[in-house]
Amino acid sequence: MRQSSLVVVANRLPIDDSVAPDGACEWRRSPGGLVSALHPLLRQTPATWVGWAGGTGPAPSLADVDGVRMHTVPLTAEDVRDHYEGFANATLWPLYHDAVEQPVYHRRWWEAYQRVNRRFAEAAADAAEPGAVVWVQDYHLQLVPGLLRELRPDLRIGFFLHVPFPPPELFMQLPRRAELLRGMLGADLIGFQRAQAAHNFAQLVAHVLDVPADDRRIALDGREVRIGAFPVSIDTTEMAALATRPDVVARAARLRRDLGDPTHVILSVDRMDYTKGIEQRLKAYSELIADGHVKVRDTVLVQVAVPSRERVAQYQVLRDRVEREVGRINGEFGRVGEPAIHYLTQPFDRAELAALYRMADIMAVTPLRDGMNLVAKEYVAARVDDTGALLLSEFAGSAAELPEAFLVNPHDLDGLKLTLMDALQADPADLTGRMRAMRAHLSRHDIHAWARSYLAALDSSGSLLTRVTTP
Ligand code: ADP
Ligand code: G6P
Image (cartoon, rainbow, N blue to C red):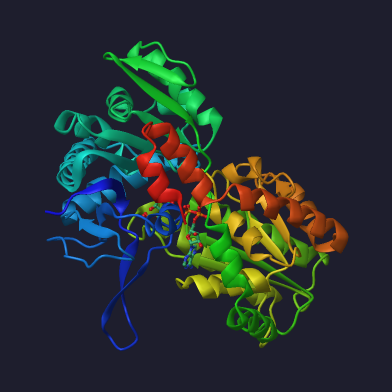
C-alpha cells in the first residue's frame, strides 16, 4: 500500500461514475461544494483521497486523478441507506440547516454511522504515512477524528465542516450529541465556515461535555484542540480563465440567442435540495409575472437543478413539488416556443457552467440556509467584465463576504420580489462597482488562500503548506 503525507477523507470521492453516450462507463467530477473546493487544490500535491465511489458492493479500484490517489471505501446497500441517506442526510443535514425540514431519528442509523465512520478511519490510517496530515471533511464523518487518533496517535488530524454548525437549542435534539462532539474533538484543529459556528460548538462542548472551551481553544485529555472560522472558496483564477476562453464566450452568446435574446436572463444553479430556496424563488418570479412587473419575453429564468440524494424521501417530495410548479408556471405564463422557465436537471462540465454564468445578467442564489454557497462565488469569478448582478440570501455563508450583492431574506416573498426588481433595474455603473468589489475580494480569498490559512494553523512545521499551496 502506497502511503501519502496528505490524506483527505471525505464521504464522496471527487469523481462520479456516469454512462457516456456510447454506453461506456466514464468518470466525471461530482457536483457539490466540497468536491469543487478540494479538487483543484489537491492536483498540486501527492495526496490520497479516501472516499466512497457512489455505488454499493466491493470498492472499485480507480486510477489516480490528476496525480491524486483514489482510495475507495466500500459501502453496502444497508450502509448507504442507514449512513448516507439516513443519519447523514435525513438526520444531520436538516438539523444543521435550521431544521427547515424535520430531522428524522432512528437508532439503527446511529449504528450504521458508527460502523461507516470506523471503516473510513481504518482506511485513512492505512493510507497515511508516519506523521502525515489527515484532513477529515464534513458531517458524514464526525466520528473519524476521534477513531483515527486512537488508531494513529502520530498523525496531525484536521476536521472541516462544510455545512453550518447549528445553535445549541437545535443540536441538543440529537440523541447522540455527546459522542458526536467527542468524535470531532479527536482533531487538532476544527474548522467551520463562520465564527458563529465555532462559537456554537464551544458553547456545546462546555455545556454537554463540561469541558472548558472558548471560541478558539478547548483543553481536553491533556491536549489542546483549536477551533476557528475558515470560509471556503473557489479556484477564482481557473473560473475566470474558463470564462474568458473564446469557445466559452461563444457558447454563452449562443445560449442567449437560443433563449430568444431576452433583455434579462436570470439564472439559478443548485443541487435539488430543500435548503436552496428553489420554491420561494419560483414563487417570487411567477408573482412578478402575474403582477405584470416582468414579461416572459423580456425576462427569462433558467433554473438548473441537478437531482441529489434521490432516494431520501424529503428530496423526492421536493423534486415533485418543484416540477409541478415549473409546469404550472410554464403552462400559465409561457407561449409556444417561449417558456417562462427553462428547467434543466443535467450535470454540466465546468466550461458549460462558465458559459451559463457568462450568459446570465442576474444570478439568483436564495438558500434558506447554506454553509457557504460556492455557486455565488463562481458566478462572481466568471463576470470578468464586471457586469451582472448577484441576488444572494442573507442565510448563505458567502453573504458575509459579499456585502455588495443584492442581499435578500428568501422567507420574505415581497422583499425577494422587490430586490429582484432592484437588481433588474439597477444602473449599470452601480452593478460594475459592486461586481468589481466582489471580484477583488475573491481574487484575494480564493481556494488557495483558504487551504493556506487552514493548513498553516494545522501543520505548524509548515512543510505541507508549501507543497499544497504553491501553484
Ligand atoms: P452544495 O455544496 O450544497 O452543493 P455549493 O453551491 O457550495 O452547494 O456547491 C455546488 C457545486 O456544485 C458548485 O461548484 C457548482 O458549480 C456545482 N454544480 C451545481 N450544479 C451543477 C451541475 N448541474 N453540474 C455540475 N456541477 C454543478
Ligand atoms: C454539500 C456537502 C458535501 C456533499 C455535497 C454533495 O456540499 O457539504 O459533503 O458532498 O453537498 O452532496 P452528495 O450527497 O451528493 O455528496
